Image 1: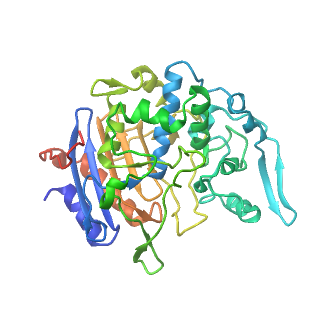
Image 2: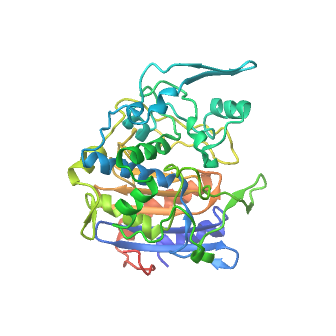
Image 3: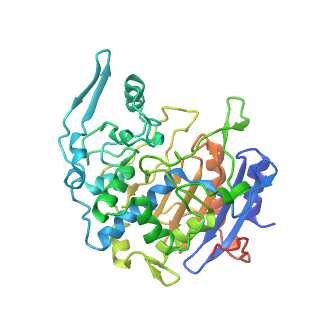
Amino acid sequence: MNEFDRVLQDAVSRKDLPFVVATLGNSDGVLWSGAAGDASPGHPATIDTVFRIFSMTKAVGSTAAMILMDRGKLGPDATVESILPEFAEMKVLESVGPDGPVFRAPRTQATVRHLATHTSGLAYEFWNANVAKYMEATQFPSILSGLRQSLKYPLQFDPGTQWDYGIGIDWLGQVVEKVDGRPVDQFVREEILEPLGMRDTRFEPDPAWGSRLAGVKIRGADGEFADFDIAPPPKPEFYGMGHALYSTAPDYLRFLRMYLNGGELDGRRILRRETIDKLLQNQIGSVQIPILKSANPAVTADVELFPGLKKSHSMAFMRVDEDVPGARSAGSQTWAGVLNTHFWFDRSADLAGLIMTQALPFADPRFMQTYAAFEQAAYAKEAAKEPAKELSRSAS
């Protein structure tokens, strides 16, 4: 048993997570893949287990916009309302009181770049108590309802002035639709998923998956896991590019390997190398990424990735701008999905990794310790010397 297998199996044995699938790759192919625990009752997790990847969808949606930028059809500094006039109706929420919400006009206009980098003023209710209060007071539908009305979350600050995590990529998907003319799900299939051979990445669950689709768990106050029902809304009024996709670790590794390869994979080019070099740089200037304080502890813990290190945001991912001791390099890109599906890729080290389960709360400290141990093993010299193994029928 190598160090990677030990990390996964020990984590499941300790009940730090219900099950786990992980994989590592570089620009040439898959380096290692493994799994531990049962993804659903009586069905062990395998490298082909299917996940609700939720916010890992965001990088795919942002890549769709980057493709249009690469082709000269979309500018990052175009105002959102110049493409989607309805965005001009968006106001900043100042307060929610006994007489209802109080709004004001934004002092700056949101741009495509603001949507892609979470600096547009849009914020999720899970980490922003003001949004949660507004939604409770007005019965405003969550973005996970699949209703088109749910795009109209109020702004929490003037675009470009702060960073807060929200539904900007759902609006960005609408920008892609308007500029290109195809529905965003069709665009993504034809321009990203099919060229990259991501055969198990879908906007709707495939009945043929059967037991390959993992179950979801939530950790209760007693520390034990219980079943939990959550999924992207089926057949929604619009596909939200912040949360809509299902995928597998091998499929998503192909997506990350495309970035390691400067925009192409197996002879299929998605983006020009010079576009990637430019758009993976810091796109938010001096704006700081703060701690995300949980407004719903059952769903998410507080989130602070790499405390004390400088972070920024590229056109599609959060960046760490300093080397992480024993782990990823400065300039590495990362993000995750709410059910604790996490990834990173490091162009300097030519390494990409995923570690995935289906459990709440997000960023559970016990899961994050496993993630850190897995990443540290990936960068350790002794782990790098172990022979690669291929557990997937189609991962490479």
